[in-house]
Image (cartoon, rainbow, N blue to C red; front, side, top):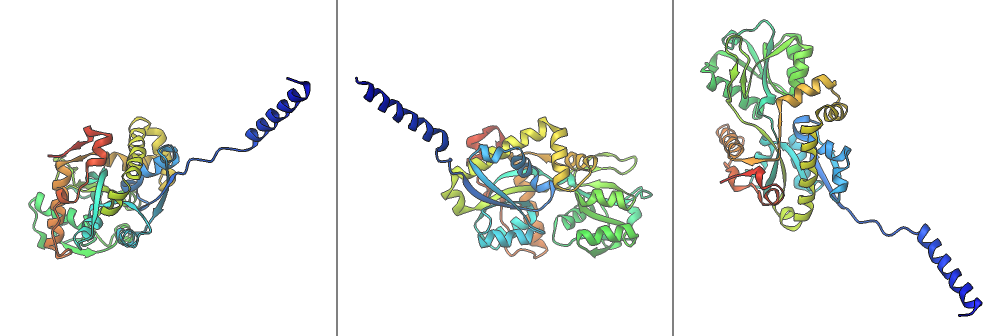
Length: 336
């Protein structure tokens, strides 16, 4: 080979190396997906952790978390197609399914039963002391279901209470001002009621804090769930598997790195870390699907149907889609 040929080959190699140094290979196209929820640690904790720790990106998902002020607003966006998946409490998504609308849930986010709480003033020692008093309740929601469950579970006379239909902010303000003796709220509203209104938890959906009668007592079940349209589940199984993969990692992170997770979530949800820790303690974060969850959701549908809030009564077993979660973590799917 001549000197000229060697020089020419060297120049070509140098040019190729130069091009390689400055031209990056095309980036892997991540699947874009909008996930709607509320700015609520009962509904969005794993979503936030998955975003902040990069679990969505590592699973191949470009996930945008969109916050909505209420379950109704989220459902409207979901029906309109501006979000592909969502995380909400049982009531709004059950109401949507009962329309009927082809929504299905693919995983749980949290058992939020313990986060449903009756808050009273520090001086109140029993439920019967509230007879004749005004109670703040948001009709047709988990707040209403909690109050009705307390009446039934503790053998009370519902006619002896004066129930005021109030939103969570109105309940908080009324409780702080002393205009109501008790409020049926959910975290983190109940923590704010306790702090600002000199309150305490008298009973939750899972426990009695009544002095002298402290005990585990499950009177109601409520859950936050991850849902999508039936068509989206059918046409985009890989995207949903990727979302579940990221959320499973986020759930493990919450379990194994509690302090770091608490700080991340406290910043996101505008809570003191100590208050955030209390909220997290009231929840059982898990993507798992089991018979207790299905029974609780069917009981909620019965409750809403009895109030004529929905015109049909959907059974949870008919609109759960467990296959995608089972493929990733079969131990988390405990359904008959």
